[in-house]
Amino acid sequence: AQTVTQSQPEMSVQEAETVTLSCTYDTSENNYYLFWYKQPPSRQMILVIRQEAYKQQNATENRFSVNFQKAAKSFSLKISDSQLGDTAMYFCAFMFNAGNNRKLIWGLGTSLAVNP
Amino acid sequence: EAQVTQNPRYLITVTGKKLTVTCSQNMNHEYMSWYRQDPGLGLRQIYYSMNVEVTDKGDVPEGYKVSRKEKRNFPLILESPSPNQTSLYFCASSLRTSGEQFFGPGTRLTVL
Image 1 (cartoon, rainbow over the protein chains, first blue to last red):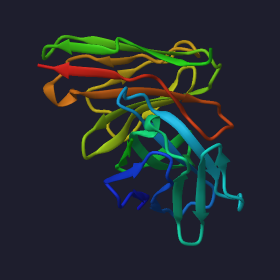
Image 2: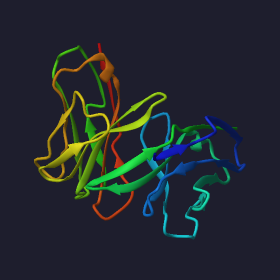
Image 3: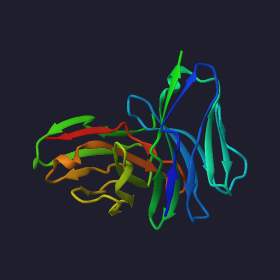
Protein backbone atom coordinates (compact mmCIF):
# COMPACT_ATOMS: atom_id res chain seq x y z
CA ALA A 1 0.00 0.00 0.00
CA GLN A 2 1.14 3.53 -0.74
CA THR A 3 0.94 5.63 2.39
CA VAL A 4 2.28 8.82 3.91
CA THR A 5 2.52 9.25 7.66
CA GLN A 6 2.95 12.54 9.46
CA SER A 7 3.38 11.59 13.09
CA GLN A 8 3.06 15.09 14.53
CA PRO A 9 -0.53 16.37 14.29
CA GLU A 10 0.41 19.68 15.91
CA MET A 11 3.62 21.56 16.56
CA SER A 12 4.59 25.00 17.76
CA VAL A 13 7.77 27.05 17.52
CA GLN A 14 8.91 30.46 18.63
CA GLU A 15 9.47 33.10 16.01
CA ALA A 16 13.05 33.03 14.61
CA GLU A 17 13.68 29.49 15.82
CA THR A 18 14.04 26.30 13.78
CA VAL A 19 11.49 23.51 13.58
CA THR A 20 11.49 20.12 11.86
CA LEU A 21 8.35 18.38 10.60
CA SER A 22 8.49 14.62 10.15
CA CYS A 23 7.21 12.55 7.26
CA THR A 24 7.61 8.90 6.40
CA TYR A 25 6.16 7.12 3.42
CA ASP A 26 5.77 3.66 2.03
CA THR A 27 5.89 2.80 -1.64
CA SER A 28 7.16 0.13 -3.96
CA GLU A 29 7.70 2.65 -6.74
CA ASN A 30 11.24 3.46 -7.86
CA ASN A 31 10.49 6.77 -9.57
CA TYR A 32 8.56 9.34 -7.63
CA TYR A 33 8.54 12.91 -6.39
CA LEU A 34 8.17 14.14 -2.84
CA PHE A 35 6.56 17.40 -1.83
CA TRP A 36 5.75 19.58 1.09
CA TYR A 37 2.70 21.76 0.64
CA LYS A 38 1.59 24.53 2.96
CA GLN A 39 -2.05 25.37 3.63
CA PRO A 40 -2.49 28.65 5.54
CA PRO A 41 -5.83 29.76 7.01
CA SER A 42 -6.82 31.03 3.54
CA ARG A 43 -6.98 27.32 2.54
CA GLN A 44 -4.82 27.90 -0.52
CA MET A 45 -2.52 24.90 -1.20
CA ILE A 46 0.99 26.24 -1.76
CA LEU A 47 4.00 24.22 -2.84
CA VAL A 48 6.87 24.70 -0.39
CA ILE A 49 9.52 22.35 -1.73
CA ARG A 50 9.94 19.36 -4.02
CA GLN A 51 12.43 16.51 -4.24
CA GLU A 52 12.97 14.01 -7.02
CA ALA A 53 13.57 10.57 -5.54
CA TYR A 54 16.50 9.85 -7.84
CA LYS A 55 18.42 12.89 -6.56
CA GLN A 56 20.57 12.31 -3.50
CA GLN A 57 21.09 16.00 -2.79
CA ASN A 58 18.56 17.45 -0.39
CA ALA A 59 16.39 20.23 -1.81
CA THR A 60 16.55 23.73 -0.36
CA GLU A 61 14.29 26.74 -0.91
CA ASN A 62 15.40 29.78 1.09
CA ARG A 63 14.49 29.02 4.75
CA PHE A 64 13.04 25.61 3.88
CA SER A 65 15.11 22.48 3.46
CA VAL A 66 14.49 18.77 3.51
CA ASN A 67 16.29 15.74 4.89
CA PHE A 68 15.58 13.00 2.37
CA GLN A 69 16.54 9.49 3.46
CA LYS A 70 15.46 7.24 0.62
CA ALA A 71 16.35 3.92 2.22
CA ALA A 72 14.47 4.85 5.36
CA LYS A 73 11.63 6.38 3.32
CA SER A 74 11.85 9.55 5.34
CA PHE A 75 11.32 13.10 4.11
CA SER A 76 11.42 15.71 6.88
CA LEU A 77 11.03 19.46 6.43
CA LYS A 78 13.17 21.95 8.30
CA ILE A 79 12.03 25.55 8.62
CA SER A 80 14.76 27.94 9.72
CA ASP A 81 14.21 31.41 11.17
CA SER A 82 10.48 30.72 11.57
CA GLN A 83 8.17 33.62 10.76
CA LEU A 84 4.60 34.32 11.84
CA GLY A 85 3.53 33.81 8.23
CA ASP A 86 4.71 30.20 8.41
CA THR A 87 1.74 29.38 10.62
CA ALA A 88 -0.19 26.85 8.55
CA MET A 89 -1.05 23.22 8.01
CA TYR A 90 1.82 21.39 6.29
CA PHE A 91 1.20 18.36 4.11
CA CYS A 92 3.75 15.83 2.96
CA ALA A 93 2.96 14.03 -0.28
CA PHE A 94 4.58 11.79 -2.84
CA MET A 95 3.67 11.45 -6.47
CA PHE A 96 4.19 8.69 -9.00
CA ASN A 97 2.92 8.00 -12.48
CA ALA A 98 0.11 5.46 -12.52
CA GLY A 99 -0.69 5.08 -16.22
CA ASN A 100 -1.97 8.49 -17.31
CA ASN A 101 -2.49 9.60 -13.73
CA ARG A 102 -0.08 11.64 -11.68
CA LYS A 103 -1.06 9.94 -8.46
CA LEU A 104 -0.57 12.02 -5.32
CA ILE A 105 -0.57 10.28 -1.94
CA TRP A 106 -1.06 12.69 0.96
CA GLY A 107 -0.34 12.68 4.64
CA LEU A 108 -2.95 14.03 7.03
CA GLY A 109 -0.94 17.11 7.85
CA THR A 110 0.90 18.82 10.69
CA SER A 111 -0.55 22.01 12.08
CA LEU A 112 2.30 24.42 12.80
CA ALA A 113 1.87 27.48 15.00
CA VAL A 114 4.61 30.10 15.06
CA ASN A 115 4.41 32.09 18.27
CA PRO A 116 5.64 35.67 18.66
CA GLU B 1 0.33 35.78 -13.74
CA ALA B 2 0.46 31.99 -13.96
CA GLN B 3 -2.44 30.59 -12.00
CA VAL B 4 -5.29 28.15 -11.57
CA THR B 5 -8.65 29.80 -10.96
CA GLN B 6 -11.82 28.29 -9.58
CA ASN B 7 -15.34 29.64 -9.39
CA PRO B 8 -17.28 30.01 -7.27
CA ARG B 9 -15.08 30.19 -4.19
CA TYR B 10 -18.02 29.57 -1.87
CA LEU B 11 -21.34 27.93 -2.61
CA ILE B 12 -24.29 26.92 -0.47
CA THR B 13 -26.90 24.86 -2.28
CA VAL B 14 -29.66 22.36 -1.64
CA THR B 15 -29.86 18.65 -2.28
CA GLY B 16 -30.54 17.76 -5.90
CA LYS B 17 -29.84 21.14 -7.50
CA LYS B 18 -27.29 20.66 -10.27
CA LEU B 19 -24.17 22.76 -10.04
CA THR B 20 -20.88 23.29 -11.84
CA VAL B 21 -17.57 24.40 -10.38
CA THR B 22 -15.32 25.86 -13.03
CA CYS B 23 -11.55 25.47 -13.19
CA SER B 24 -9.24 27.25 -15.57
CA GLN B 25 -5.46 27.39 -15.92
CA ASN B 26 -3.32 29.71 -18.04
CA MET B 27 -0.09 27.69 -17.99
CA ASN B 28 -0.81 25.43 -20.97
CA HIS B 29 -0.72 22.39 -18.70
CA GLU B 30 -1.76 19.05 -20.13
CA TYR B 31 -2.72 17.43 -16.82
CA MET B 32 -5.60 18.61 -14.63
CA SER B 33 -7.24 17.04 -11.61
CA TRP B 34 -9.96 17.55 -9.02
CA TYR B 35 -9.60 16.78 -5.32
CA ARG B 36 -11.79 17.04 -2.29
CA GLN B 37 -10.45 17.73 1.17
CA ASP B 38 -12.27 16.49 4.25
CA PRO B 39 -11.13 16.56 7.90
CA GLY B 40 -9.40 13.35 8.91
CA LEU B 41 -9.45 12.02 5.35
CA GLY B 42 -6.95 14.32 3.69
CA LEU B 43 -7.09 15.08 -0.02
CA ARG B 44 -8.71 12.54 -2.27
CA GLN B 45 -8.70 12.58 -6.04
CA ILE B 46 -12.07 12.74 -7.80
CA TYR B 47 -11.21 12.83 -11.51
CA TYR B 48 -8.23 13.64 -13.65
CA SER B 49 -7.48 14.49 -17.25
CA MET B 50 -4.26 13.95 -19.14
CA ASN B 51 -5.34 16.02 -22.14
CA VAL B 52 -8.31 17.33 -24.10
CA GLU B 53 -11.11 14.73 -24.27
CA VAL B 54 -9.11 12.35 -22.04
CA THR B 55 -10.55 11.98 -18.55
CA ASP B 56 -10.59 9.18 -16.00
CA LYS B 57 -11.80 8.38 -12.50
CA GLY B 58 -9.77 8.99 -9.41
CA ASP B 59 -10.41 7.46 -6.00
CA VAL B 60 -13.83 8.99 -5.23
CA PRO B 61 -15.66 9.69 -8.52
CA GLU B 62 -19.19 8.73 -7.45
CA GLY B 63 -21.64 11.61 -7.83
CA TYR B 64 -19.34 13.72 -10.00
CA LYS B 65 -18.78 14.31 -13.69
CA VAL B 66 -16.10 16.20 -15.56
CA SER B 67 -15.36 17.29 -19.10
CA ARG B 68 -12.26 18.51 -20.90
CA LYS B 69 -13.29 20.19 -24.12
CA GLU B 70 -10.51 22.75 -24.01
CA LYS B 71 -7.00 22.43 -22.66
CA ARG B 72 -7.38 25.28 -20.17
CA ASN B 73 -10.75 24.33 -18.64
CA PHE B 74 -11.79 21.37 -16.50
CA PRO B 75 -15.21 21.88 -14.90
CA LEU B 76 -16.55 19.67 -12.12
CA ILE B 77 -20.25 18.86 -12.36
CA LEU B 78 -22.48 17.65 -9.57
CA GLU B 79 -25.68 16.48 -11.25
CA SER B 80 -27.61 15.87 -8.04
CA PRO B 81 -25.62 17.08 -5.03
CA SER B 82 -26.08 15.42 -1.68
CA PRO B 83 -25.00 16.50 1.83
CA ASN B 84 -22.08 14.04 1.80
CA GLN B 85 -20.56 16.12 -1.00
CA THR B 86 -20.14 19.04 1.38
CA SER B 87 -16.39 19.60 1.21
CA LEU B 88 -13.51 21.81 0.14
CA TYR B 89 -12.70 21.21 -3.53
CA PHE B 90 -9.41 21.87 -5.27
CA CYS B 91 -8.52 21.91 -8.92
CA ALA B 92 -4.87 21.36 -9.84
CA SER B 93 -2.78 21.27 -13.00
CA SER B 94 0.69 20.31 -14.11
CA LEU B 95 2.81 19.82 -17.15
CA ARG B 96 2.99 16.29 -18.51
CA THR B 97 6.72 16.18 -17.83
CA SER B 98 6.99 17.94 -14.48
CA GLY B 99 6.33 16.74 -10.97
CA GLU B 100 4.49 19.36 -9.00
CA GLN B 101 0.83 20.18 -9.33
CA PHE B 102 -0.33 23.77 -8.98
CA PHE B 103 -3.53 24.24 -7.05
CA GLY B 104 -6.42 26.62 -7.40
CA PRO B 105 -7.68 28.60 -4.39
CA GLY B 106 -10.35 26.05 -3.47
CA THR B 107 -14.15 26.03 -3.52
CA ARG B 108 -16.02 25.59 -0.26
CA LEU B 109 -19.26 23.73 -1.06
CA THR B 110 -22.09 23.19 1.39
CA VAL B 111 -25.04 21.02 0.39
CA LEU B 112 -28.07 21.35 2.68
